Image (cartoon, rainbow, N blue to C red):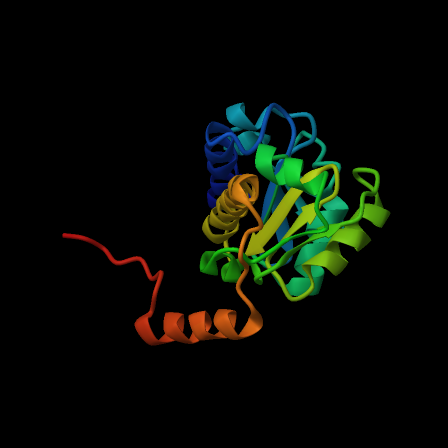
Amino acid sequence: MMLRSLREQVASHARALAEAGLVLGTAGNISARQGDLVAVTPTGARLADLRAEHVTVVDQDGGVVEGTLAPTSELDLHLGVYRRFRAGAVVHTHAPMATALSLVVDELPCVHYQLVELGGTVPVAPYRTFGTTELADAVLEALDGRTAALMANHGGITFGADLATAAHRALLLEWGCELYWRASLLGKPRTLDRTERADYERQVARLRYGVTRELD
């Protein structure tokens, strides 16, 4: 099987995101890149049941290289992220809180320093029909300078150097959306300005904050 390890990673992360409640049924799609090839979830597949052999391999033009199932309808969006940002993996979900906020806000403000990992303020790309080049173009513009975006009346998208990072950011985006929602019920949430976000980034670099350490 071509790209066996990468296909297994795509399948396992799809199942994990489904278990976490970020994808429901066939809604959402995940991909990872190795060189000029991309392993991507197929269209119409229940992500909670996905196995490596279900994952499709495509080239940079979207041509199927291996796999019996058609790739996700959002393939243009995934390939666009790889071309524009040289990402290693892309995660698109219809996570409940991210989708809910995409219905009512123009951006997710930076209400917690961890959201700096996503670029700080997370914009909402304007609504476009799913699976179209118009949607891909709108989302790519929203992602410029960030690693996450919300998609109006649709969901959220994140990317990273690898699947673990992209999936972590999908969870972080959902957490940030819920945090903002909960705070908004109590009053107007305070946000972090550019100076505060820059101070956080310097402190991260100084302390190597967030670096996972193996425990004995």
